[in-house]
Image (cartoon, rainbow, N blue to C red):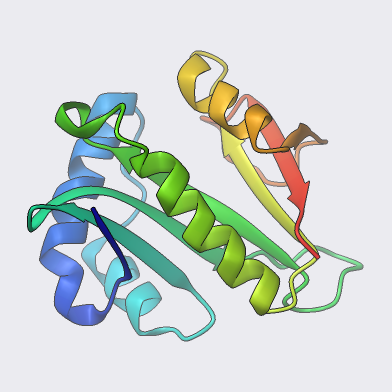
Length: 153
């Protein structure tokens, strides 16, 4: 397994993974190709890809989260954690989260937030095992039913 920070040259692999992610979760696709390109080019955002034998196997993104009353960069948001079904059980989600959390800590962030759905029990179990705890709703995502955060700094 190889975990790397995605660059604009990885856009095709990321599009493929995100298309599968939105279909698997049965949620409305909210990332346009322009959004993805902008995020990959923005040094404040970061996305990681997992490759197994050269094949894209998973992804996770970390974005700035502007929260009222918090200094810029102190709150980040974990988005789009996904491991392809054929590659699950190999520690891909853990490796992606390790890279994301290390980056957040090194960047001086205090919190990583995330939203999810209550029927994604495997994902929620992973987050809880990693120290994410329930928090108040912090966004207006109509598809999200669970809100969590973890102190990283």
